[in-house]
Length: 196
Image (cartoon, rainbow, N blue to C red; front, side, top):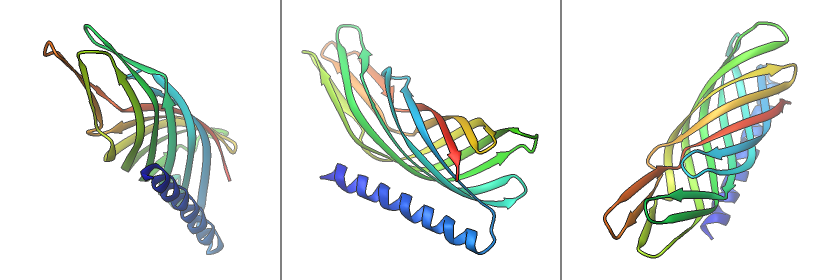
């Protein structure tokens, strides 16, 4: 039930942000609406996946934009190895909604960009299975996070890499012999998209 509610909230936020960007365009404000497909990699577990990003932004001064970043990433297939047991990490859903600032260098047809997002990550669900003598404690729910980004724009196209640092969202594995291993749920996303 919580998954359905969070998904509905994320979709509503995407629609509101796009509608607000369209209203700004009608008033003569320079806007960018970037939409991208993303590939995600979770370094802590080795999980991979994909998702979608929508970023409506307003130009506040030449080449400097502020706006929103909304993303959904679905990952799976990870594994956490510890001394005497392996923990399999199944499908996980991560939704983020944040404020973003971005600078694009005015260098011609291929323009480098840097950006930083700050806001909330919602870890909706994740399947985890452990062997005997092993317990798993994972943090799910709402977390603050940062999303530094580098990339390039080419025409209306865009290629970017974003590191999603989800602060405080960890998976902790404890074995009966007393060993504990903590793995962060940060993820790297590679995004290929277009401006509308």
